[in-house]
Length: 579
Image (cartoon, rainbow, N blue to C red; front, side, top):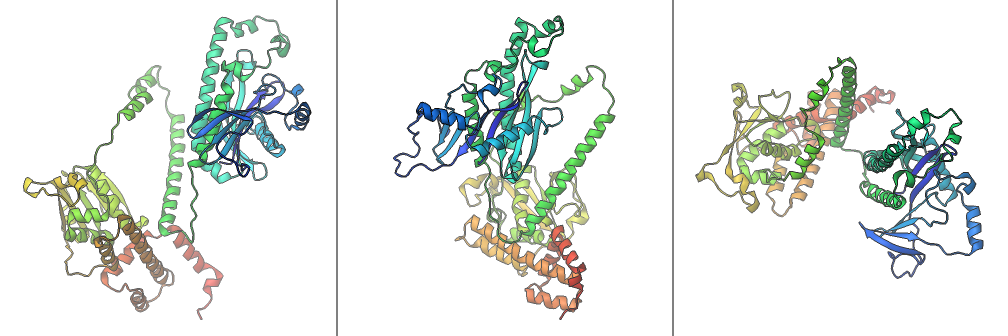
């Protein structure tokens, strides 16, 4: 990841200062190098972990070169630095890690050597600890621009018995030029940086408590006559972070953490190049995601209002309520003891066809494509859920409405996939309806036990599947064209499951394009029925089942596509007469 991670500190004497930063170097090695992953001549390997080899940099140069390098360094002068502003000792070469997989180097020092990078980090440091402050002064915040980069900043306090208010202000910042990538990495960065901060605060708290136990500063300050604060502390205005945490290996540990953070954050996200317009399924999924985000925001707002209006509980009542909930530690221990169990599940459409049999599968698939209600009754909720996951792949995303498992019957307008427990009674008019199909899962009798075709599918052989409907599909019925093509792909053993899935995607896109044409022709242009019949003949969808399928799939069109067509019709160019 092309980013810089830095630890910053607000010094009481010198203001915001950068303490420690880690950057990524992609510079190629010289040609003819024997081993690209070996440390350079001035680097000594120390340890290797997770594909990253850590080494401590050493430089050899003449006094004249050292003087010139010091004079040209973009960092602040030694006279402008105190113990609180300094991380590495004078002359410390810094740290470097080699990533053997990518030949990338992670270099850590107090300031970037490049003047432009130093300016960017310096500005981000100042903004993170001065003008860009989140509520409460502790927590994450995002800011930046195209010129100086975008910054994820997390500010926090470190306990110090000698500081004003007994604490000092720090921040960990991540600087990138890619705004989208940084925003998408927000949850990951927040969790990992929060862990680094918690570790620093824990170490500092132990030192603070030990110092307060030995010599309480609060009482001493209250008993001391008023004097200027800096003179009162007898020159202890600045303390290094290593002193506050009592950790001499602090900067080496921070280098390891920052290097891992840059490597892990860069490898967790991958970019995909999408060519052409987005599919209807993609648009519908984006719309559903936006609706979920709006609902979550409204719920958060309503919960906040309820908390404000909530009555004050008597002392101890809140504690009694909290004891009803399991603690985090118990949840973690349960997760640690969790073992995956073997589920009786359907793996693909071809697998389901083998289990149910060709006639029953065809009847079930016909009802699915027509938009009729599909009801599964079984004691195994995981089996029902897996069946719905397989069957919903036959439909556009916008046509799928699922209630995975319910203790009562739900009407067809609410869902076209409904899972029920065996004791639930289905209304008689639904059982006799031609717009519903019921799949009942029973325990198979010993005479019915038989393998379903694959050695690893014996778990499903203990079930018996009964598919019934008020309008059974006759074997000689032609059915919709897409169903016949699906069955042809499923029965072709030369096609793998992945190839069949891609065939299914292509078939759905083909018929969704026909749905778009029919929608514009009938709903937008309002053509007469005669013209509609001619269009259906041209599309190869004049049969009754094909027409029903197109009308049902029309309900799965995205709102974005519909609004686009309507806006096109209302535009001035659309009102021109047809030539």
